[in-house]
Image 1 (cartoon, rainbow, N blue to C red):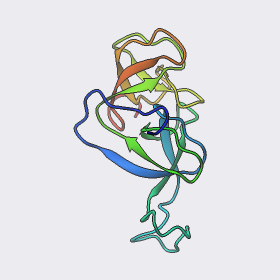
Image 2 (tube, helix red, strand yellow):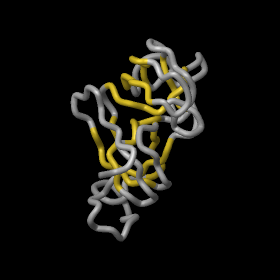
Image 3 (tube, helix red, strand yellow):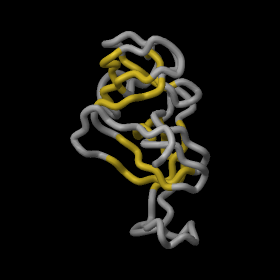
Image 4 (cartoon, rainbow, N blue to C red):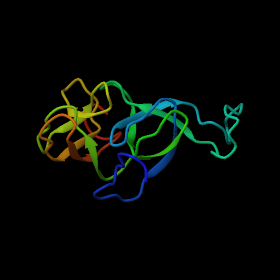
Length: 148
């Protein structure tokens, strides 16, 4: 069983397999970090691993201005495949205490924190996190809402 698995509370069904371009921790926000490894419209095959079937590359989010694509489904070492959850209500590790109902963004470690007016908003806190490294239930709103 993978370590630190992100098991959604409610999910309509949106998971995309990605390849870690750097180590990723489960239940944290991730961003695209490179082109798809191979496949249609990719001008040159960028990987010798033919078993991966052309996947997108991702890394942990590192700033509230990142274009987050979802939450890592579990821990992944560099070059490992992992699922990215992009819809539903999922556990996201908090970087600070978060109150239910607040919009959230990411900190420098991919953890959820309360968003300010200057931040991109990636979700809404559905159930509070009491502090750092506690999981908060986040309704993902990627690409929707204020400052997205």
